Image 1 (cartoon, rainbow, N blue to C red):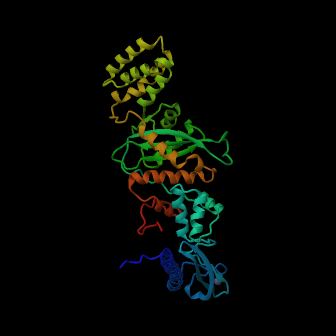
Image 2 (cartoon, protein in one colour):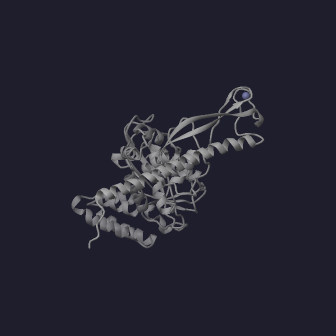
Image 3 (cartoon, rainbow, N blue to C red):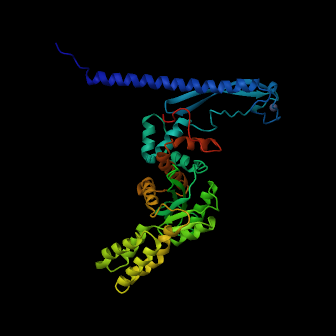
Amino acid sequence: MSILAPSPTEKLQAIYAVLRAVRAASRRCLELSLQGLLDSYVSRGLLQAVPPWECNRCGSRDPASFRRNGVYHRKLSTLSGVVVLAVPRLRCRCGAHVKLSFPVLERRKRHWWDVWLQVMEGLGERVSVWHLRDRLWRRGVYLGRSTIVRWLADMALPALGAIPGRTDEIQVDGLYGHLWGPLPRRWHDHTYALLIAVNRDPACPEKVLGAVLAQTEDREGYRSLADLLLSRGLSPETTLTVTSDGAQAIRAGLGVSFPRAQFVRCLWHLSRLVGELAPVELRDEVRRDCRYVLRAQDWDQAVERYQRFREKWLQRAPDSCRALADGFEDAMLPLVSKTPVRQRTNGLAERMAREFRRFLRPREALRSTRTAPALVALALAQINARHKREDWLPAFLGAALGWPQRLTEFRVPLHT
Ligand SMILES: [Zn+2]
């Protein structure tokens, strides 16, 4: 005797039946929940000494002035399907209609918050606008591409809040990309620079402390980045140690906001630069010798090794000698610094810059200046979320609702 396996037709029909039942139940459940909230909002308001609305014509806020005046029907698109709500209406004693705004129902919005969350989650996870639209269409939610782009452009950016824990060592780097669409005032071309500050401190779980979109890696851009750190609670008096690839704009910009900051040159970048400035056939040896200088254990040893390097290479690789002379003091600063310096390269900043590049890669590039800040904020939130082990989505919901602080958790899962 053999067991008869169900046919593909039977399986399909079973799956179909289950999904249809789940969808019908969740649609109905959503409809009842929203309806219940609308009704109770009005009932509770009528019982209050001062209701949460007033008459536009006579200005009355006396609960005795208001009478229920039937309902009007409104359709709302949700991930569970279209729900129809009977929105309560009120009339004032003076005869005017009373405008109500419900906490659970936005004016002139055809989609409920679950759709908005789905869109933001998808955009944050680098789903393209086209794919996002198709994904929603498959769920019976009709949302045009332009609406998704508008939501992104209108997105409120969550506050970054105070830096968790203290930090006295940071790394700074800039990365370049292409900005589409009309340019902001005074921008000459479509290249943008994203300037980032990252945290080296093991005690602080937040990795990217701030990102600033600028036209290029200039002093003004880095000054804004420094001011962002000030706004997050870093003291201008702190003896901040800043490690970078040695761009002058970094020192000039951050030095304005942090006058006591000390600037350390990345050892890796310096030895690469010194090597590249030598004639091709000597590069490997010059770079090796340079690394030997930079690996010195104390200042005297470093100076001695530097002098030997200079004697050996001054004739054959003068540009390399000049580059090492220029960067030597900044690179060796940790050997003489009063405050301990743990970081000698800006490798972490470079790794974080690569993560940003993955988020803002050319295909998904910053398509317009209107949506660019939102995309950068989404990328930053996601990059940090992994290290902070927090859900990044609540912060954006909180910002959209006007929540003043950074919302770090939502008591039910937002992922529908
Ligand atoms: Zn009135």
